[in-house]
Length: 297
Length: 297
Image (cartoon, rainbow over all chains, first blue to last red; front, side, top):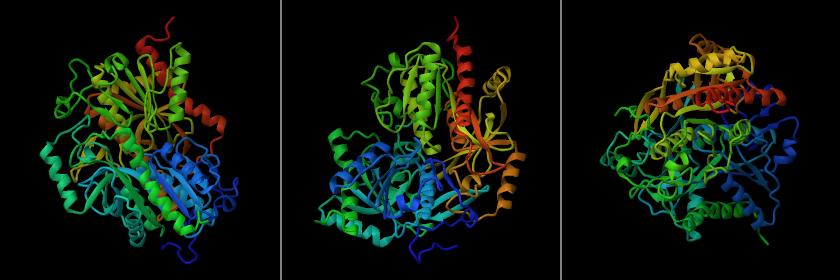
């Protein structure tokens, strides 16, 4: 089944659910029939997401303030995710890792489908470990590899391994990269490795377990670098594959908070961290303003 | 390298990190040298964890109140996890899924190792979908299977798939089961399936994507049931494998909030939900009281 790109509405690629009238978006605590979803979410054009609820709240509040919009209250009724709406932009946290992210993506896609939202772009704004780029570099992903260094998101469905192509929208990452250059931001493009844990999965030497040597670690990081990987986080293959499968344009914009070629521990000064953390926001908010005309006098 | 079981201290199975003096437990925001870890955490004997920060906070507060202990403030300095201490019990949230859990486990194991904590038991208290058991049943896991229905946690380390045996402590799950029976609680033992997502990974028909039929779904759920699986959640193989690898006794006690043989949507009444959600706490807190003598007059 192909994504329904004709009218631009976020598609529901589930013929069984398509016959139902009610749906409980369990992890947002939102029921389809008890909220007027088209009225509340029909105008959404961007979904901005990231792991940390506090950071996403900060971004939502800053965007509202910058543009004179209302941020309103957290629209998620559970403590699993936060969900803020500022005009045509949703700000949603997704927790750590592909599993947590996948729930947020499924329920957001269903929410926007029911809302009849059209031509929506999803952008993940995150932190990551850099590979051969200085801390503070904003990496715009042009591809994503999994723990086996293959460009797929791995699912297990009814006992079988299923590989979903992890593909980003080329126009979108090019546009974001060029805008970053225009704004004199320290941007780079490269592949992003999606790990399933922070320690052994990222070849760190500082976990509770370590069966490999420092040489093994650098051999692997050098292999990644030679294949075009410029940063490591924990969501990229899932994010790119699920949005691609739904025909939704998507990008990942991550700041790097250390260079893994130089260490494993995150030791950035707090003031630098606050600066680095805002860089994906600064780039993406400018992009949204250009696309929507918001903030024009 | 075997777990250091001789003196009961939580082991650090990382010879490289063992040579370092400093360690930044990044996702708790705790540095080894700036907190007196033995003084603060040396008396810990139980780590109780679960996905939801609000639920773990509730459990910590209730345990403190029940036993006349101080709950104190959240000791985690980040918004990724909450961490409360009530006497010898830590209450820590781990978010959704194995990736998020793995970080919490690694940093908790390191924390307790540095604290010189001895003979610590880890228990996950969660919610789950039941398989052929009524909602509200408290399932005590006697095994865990991954998305390929194998009793392993899957890691990817330096590009290679590594399988870690997912094994629980038999004495512990037996003791918890027998205590549940004594307390007239609706307990069951069975294997727990650990899925990497909530929808397709659990054979649900109500996700944003669905390429299989209702018959396919039930064929798979029946296969799981015939193999002894009684509930599905998103952390069991990681939790059992990582604790087993470290030589830490561990158990999972999950309430079921629906019977997947009868549906996919969670539609339990709020008052029932609140009741079901407390059942793992009620069982585990009784177990801890018996083991520690806490709460004895």
